[in-house]
Each structure stands twice: as C-alpha cells, then as structure tokens.
Image 1 (cartoon, rainbow over the protein chains, first blue to last red):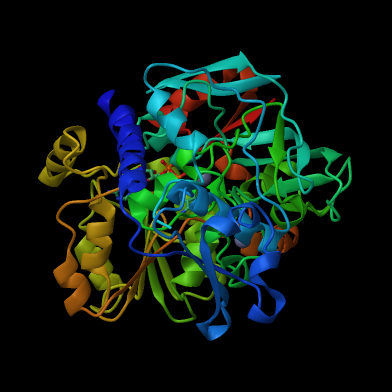
Image 2 (cartoon, rainbow over the protein chains, first blue to last red):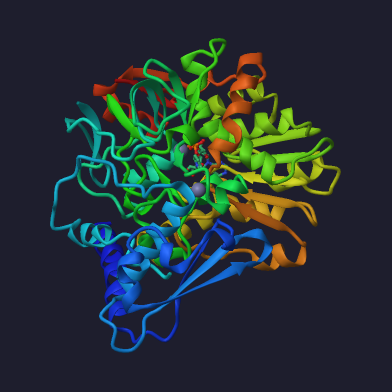
Length: 132
Length: 389
Ligand SMILES: NC(=O)c1ccc[n+]([C@@H]2O[C@H](COP(=O)([O-])OP(=O)(O)OC[C@H]3O[C@@H](n4cnc5c(N)ncnc54)[C@H](O)[C@@H]3O)[C@@H](O)[C@H]2O)c1
Ligand SMILES: [Zn+2]
Ligand SMILES: [Zn+2]
C-alpha cells in the first residue's frame, strides 16, 4: 500500500530524467485548434517565442479541420531542452485556444512528506514531462 | 477555511487551510453550499490512485454561490447559485468543440503523469489527485472554479439545491453512459452497480426510451431506489443467476447495451473475487474488473458496453475473445459534464429526473470523515453522504 505512491511518483520522474538525456531524434508536435492562416512562426504566443532562436519550428495544416500542427525540432548543439519545448508547446496551445494558461489552484493545502516528495517533484514540472 | 483533507491511505481529517484565490482571469470563487461523496473518492481513499499528497482537499460534486469573479468572467455574477461540472474544461480546444469535455487539452496542469501512464492526458478534475491537476476539492467552505463560463451553470429557480447537486457529476456521468453507448427506443439495457451513478444511468436509459432497464447490485436498499426512482427492474447478484436472467429477459439475445457503473474495487461472490483482490494487493493488477467481464459476457452480439466505473491501470483476465468474436463496441469516459448539465437541469425542473433520494445522509462538513466511513462501508444504507460547510 505504502510503496504505491512512491513507486508511481518515482516512475514518472524517472521517465522524465531518461527523456532529458535521450538524444533528440524526432520533433515535438502539438495540434492547436486554430486555422493555419491565423498563425505565424514568429508570432506564436507564450514561451515558444523565447526559444525560437534555439529550435526549428514548422507549421502545417492538420487534416480533417483539426487546426494546425506545430512541430519543434531541437538541432544538435542547441541548449534548449525537451522539457522546455514541451512546456512551451503546451502553453502556446492553451494561449491560442483558451487565451490563457491554467495555473494550479492555490495557495497550496498540502504538506511535504518523505512519501510525496517524488510526486511533488513531478508536478513542479508538470508541463515539461510526458510524451509530447 | 475548514476543509476535508486526505491525510494518507484511509485517513481523512477536517482541518484549516488557506482560502482559495483567483488565479486566472476566467476563475470564480464559489462558496460551497452542498458537496457530496462519490464512489470515485473511495479509489483515492484506498490508495488505488497513488497521486495524492498529504493535505489534499477532496470533493468534486458540489453546488454553491458565486462570491468573486475574475475579470474575464461573462456568465456569472456574485450571488449566482451554480452547479459546477466535476471536470475542468477550456471550452475552446478541439476536444471541447467535439463536446468531449473531460478530454480537454488545456484543463490539466500536470499532463505529464497521465500522458506517461496512458499515452495521452485527460483534463483536470476537482479534488481528484495530482494526476488530474491537483485542484483543491469542494469539501471546503470555498472553492476556486477555473474556466467558470464553461463549467459553472446557473441553477433555475424551479430546481432545489438538493436536486441540482447531482447534476455536477453523477447524473452527468450516468446520462453520458446511456447517451454514448447509443441507448435507443426498444433496447434492453443492463446496468451493473446501483450507486448514484448506476441509478442515474438507468434513469437516463428509461428516459431515452429503452424497452427494459435492469439494474444489478447486491444492496437491496439501492435496488429498491432503482425500482422506485429510475423505473428499472432489478437483480441481486448474490441471489440471482445474472447471466441467465439477462438472457431470459432479453429474449435470449442478451442486453443491447451494458453499462458498468461499479469501478475498480468491484466485489464478486465467486472465486474470481479472491483471485482479483490478491492480485490487486500484490500490485500484479491495479484494478478489479469483475463487472466489466460480466458485462462483456452478457452483452448481445454486436452490442455496446460502456465503462463508467473508474479504472486506473491494468486488469487481468480481460475477455478480449468475447469482445472480438461478438463484435462488441466497448467505450468508456470520464464525464463530459458541460455537455449534459443544462439539459439535466431542465429535466430536473420538469420532474423527469429526481436525485434527492440519493442523499441518504446529510451532515455538517466537520463530520465528513464519519460520512466517508458510512459511505465506504455502506453503513445504515448510506447511498451518498452530503456535507454542508
Ligand atoms: N466516468 C466518470 O466520469 C465517473 C464519474 C463518477 C463516478 N464514476 C465511477 O462510477 C463508479 C460508481 O460510482 P458510485 O458513486 O455510484 O459508487 P458506489 O460505490 O456508491 O456504487 C458502486 C456500486 O457497485 C456495486 N457493486 C460492487 N461490485 C459489483 C458487481 N460485481 N456487480 C454489480 N454491482 C457491484 C456496489 O454494491 C455499489 O452499490 C465508481 O467506480 C466511480 O469511480 C465515474
Ligand atoms: Zn465523481
Ligand atoms: Zn478544452
């Protein structure tokens, strides 16, 4: 019972760590529900703009009226990390679609414990991890 | 303010926490007037969804009064009586456009956890672990509601607090199960589980014109409610031969639609229960899928199975052979509340959908740990415990 949260939280963190060290062989991509005609690489809102110098960004029309695919590739030697790109892509999508980026509720009601430390580490980087 | 906090596996306590604040311009703060236990909370309580932190505030099914609005809020004003969808959705992404609100791309601040577990992340939910965004829940005096123009709905004067409360989660969930599994006039529908969710699914199936609706549980008080308030027939799985009865009551075909409203802590009188419980405790499987197995086995050829019960990970002995060879459609979802709440409120106003009988126990928020104990153990015929902060 007690091993559950630790193991699961640790698994998420471990996947993120491994993700950070992996050589970048593919692009990170999101689809935003906005027509291609409305978007321009240099005008994308959010922190994607701050890292445009370090990455290659491509826009393409998504099939079936699903909007626009934003693909980001990190070139060899760039200092930009996968985590930064994932977070930027999620924020850009939210800004384009919802006009805002949801913040976690607050002030926090939780207390740090030995058991929840891995989970707190994972959620502090909630938009950087994952599979995007 | 006072709030019910998760303190560890099977440990709850009411404590004092900071008042919630507006964080985004589309937020409102709601003063909670009624908030209710849900079967989903039992999975958190028991540690089956291991993404809780000590101090997290539980609760996702609630109504209240708007007390503060962010600058971008258009549809609500201080003083409004509102019911809020348990899932948080932006209203503007592709999924929201398809009315698949619990799949919203922008409503979960921690998408990494579920993306890693499941491949893609569903949206966020109130009081439902850090995998679902870590949003403070409704078992509190106040709650912050993000994207309030999308997820909060004014309650018509004709609908009482007692009735409107359940539009927030259980009625929306039940309706979704009947709707998305394609219930239509002439269908025979079987529903596993006579909790609030199963009863609401059964009532939805009746209102959508099903010819026969059969609810299965072992708790007689809940089955009696399903007969009285949903207009369903009932079977008791500790007494009746469920597979045989369902076949007989559907002309030998099997039910056209099977809705599972039990979840990953399903109970079973047969030997498979011990097997599943042991495997779950050893973490060889995370969920006990007894009712889903039965639903797939009972369903008519080419029929439809909807999984409303919450599952977190993996199940064992999943009858893939029956699913494939009988040509079944199996679907599941977290609830798309925004899609159904206005229609449900309308039906509540007309008296077609009643819910107040579900609130078998009403108590002050300070007694919430007792309420959860009763709800978990089904003590004193508890169907749902409602808390008044
Ligand atoms: N999909 C969603 O968005 C959503 C929303 C709300 C609740 N849920 C889930 O729906 C499920 C039911 O919720 P609830 O609040 O009604 O819970 P509940 O615990 O009150 O009811 C579950 C019922 O299932 C019965 N049951 C147990 N094993 C059974 C079996 N093998 N066959 C038939 N019945 C069996 C129990 O006796 C109980 O009456 C839970 O898993 C909950 O997490 C899902
Ligand atoms: Zn619920
Ligand atoms: Zn959305």
